[in-house]
Length: 325
Image (cartoon, rainbow, N blue to C red; front, side, top):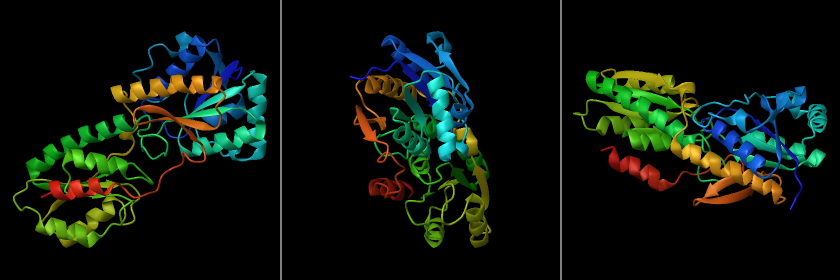
């Protein structure tokens, strides 16, 4: 058991729905165990600048349903330097912070690991990213809300596609991971899904469109951003060139996927890992991410909780192939 007296809490990197639920869970769990909480605004940048303040149970009232993060978030180039990290540590000492809970993704945890090793301060991470691209958890905070936001948007797009006999190329987030595109593509009944984990053969896409049912009044192609074959506009240009008779349109969903009220699943996930983070610090854990694997709390060292650039489950791709006929 470790005597933790004051936990510094911050969000870093891209925001995701459910971060506020996680903030609430950490603050109230700490209070339950008799530990103070210091909020850090704007992540590592706020840590360096001393933008720290005490948090109590009232400061997290009525936030569980809100998207975004009340602690704000920002990227910090200065924190990448030893001088910047030293400034951050001095601010933590000034506010008597002796442990940290970081809510974010891969970059957040890399920074947390370096900081903890330099200044011997325990840090626990919570997986806050819509991309679901971290090892050590079945789902990340914000992923479920994001995919439901995409599905809602694509269902609306399908309505207008049906009305005008159009082909829509829908681009979703997932810079290094195609999990949003893959899962929502299956759920939306997409004809084709293009993701970075599976090499894109544009001729195969042409072939599928050529051999597809001619009586289908709408077609949807789901595309993860930054794919090797180009963005949605480039794919659209090639399709228009090959099939000039198709009424081809492009829709880039963009940051709408990050916002909105978190789903029930994200609120419960955030609450569970938030409580577990405080209990982990009390038990002496450090430099680990708290996740859920097979619905059980799991602890993954930061160096292993990195972005997974791996093969997608082939069963998912087979499902797309079967159901697109």
